[in-house]
Image (spheres, helix red, strand yellow):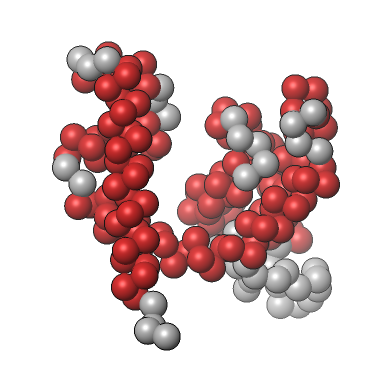
Length: 191
């Protein structure tokens, strides 16, 4: 995914390298956008700020697309840009200065690279565990995590209290964590 592959230095062979066409760039960017967003969220915890960083990253990628080698994975290349844009964002945002300096941001991104294989192993079990949830729980998860709705919006939309939605999300997260942990543990070879 985003950070667990080493990027080879840029070597351009003008005889063999064909730059991505505009529509191919858009396809590959959209395919990897969520991964890039998850990467940015490691150091930019505010979703709207992180989405802004991803947009700035897309612009930077577009400006440098002639340097991308389509034979290599796109996400690691894009995440290098995203890391720089995220750090730049943190420097500009005075409110984050006391919270997270560039050195800590770099350490967090490095730690994410280290645990990426573990995160990848948990993704399929997570999908399976979500599919086992009651439909109401799946709906609330979808509204909260994928539609970026606030707890207040979800509560109003479902005719429930905010407190009830918070409690439901807490129970669902706990259920998912237990389910994923059990699945991953059952897949590990016995020692």
